[in-house]
Image (cartoon, rainbow, N blue to C red; front, side, top):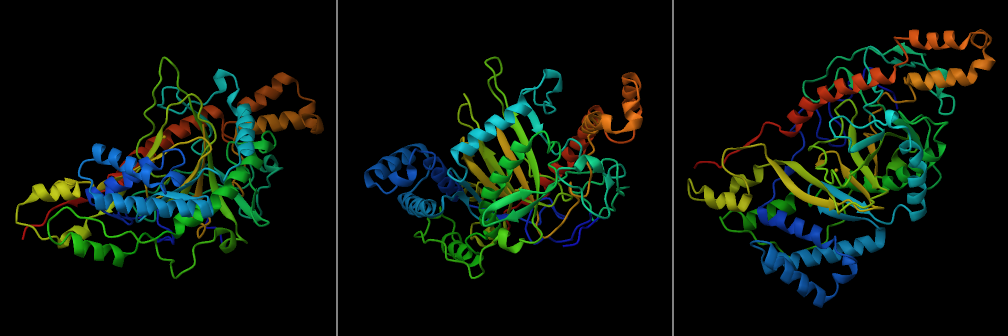
Length: 515
């Protein structure tokens, strides 16, 4: 697969992600209030211990029904029967695959509590401690988080900088000897924006390249940006294990196409043409799609994948016990071509239950066929949950519990906020500049490498320590110092803030039609 050094990428991507040329290029079907209530109700029931076993117990289900009816407005018996049938189907899938979907509409969110072994979770905790236990002056608190979010590995630090970073046009940067490439290559040109909107002409997050090995293994073959391969080999091996387990979840969310337009449109014609509160039809398990599901391991066996890695910790204290989480966002910009995310929660210590919330941009086309009296907006608003002349058709899809040991995956069309390892999958159809082409840019890595090699370099070995330090100080252009990297991060975040807001708050208004 040819690498696109111009970084413009294709105009259309095989997999949907929100931040494309047109921010409304992907929209989920807007759901009726009752549909959303059913989704959220099932999510809450799936948080109960051993729900997958208890859902087959009629006595327990009767108790759950009583709880739901007393706490959720306008919840009918038919809605409850549908929820129980779907939960039983989910329980069957969970037993067969170890994976379950708490959100299953036009897009799907899935998780597994058994994919990652307890021994791997504990090993990751121990390995990451070496990143956490550093002097306070070296701790990298994420900007604007009141020292609540500690960045251990973050793609916004030392990103690709157009017009500054160096790129190899021939050959690749090795993993073990990556420092020998520092300073090599040609300066990457600033790309021509292929379109307005969610594109940066200043920065790009750098993924690492990974290869498939054996039946179910992954090998990282280029350095993870901001994670030194020689200093943290244990973390590399553990991240490889998590990526390997994330691949089947990505297969599922990227293969998912929802219930199908025919099925949904039939339901609308039966339930929504005349103005009344819709009832669900009988639940039927999803039909097996005609096309085989995506198999990343098989389809990209030769080219491998590109993954952007992030490690971050959230810290709370008795004096500041709450953290509201991040803002609504999708991951990255069009430069990164991120199509799916996987998050592994490897430690939740002394933290009350927290959730990752999801919402989607929606299309109101399904509402156009409803029959109602002209100007009768009150009933419409009750059914749809949207008011006439409402901006920004964004609909909540509920939330998923951030449980210790849980591996969660979702496509990059759903907006979300929330000690975790995050993996961002670059569209496998697109090859972007990665650490296999961009040598390390970290000045502190370069300095340490030179100090370790000093005795083997005659000219350096004869220099007094004072002159050696002077040499390091006088290097201004490249590599990049930590102080300058943080300034670059601030500029990156400042640039992405308005772009992200424009993508999320895309211009779409909801109007009830006059007739």
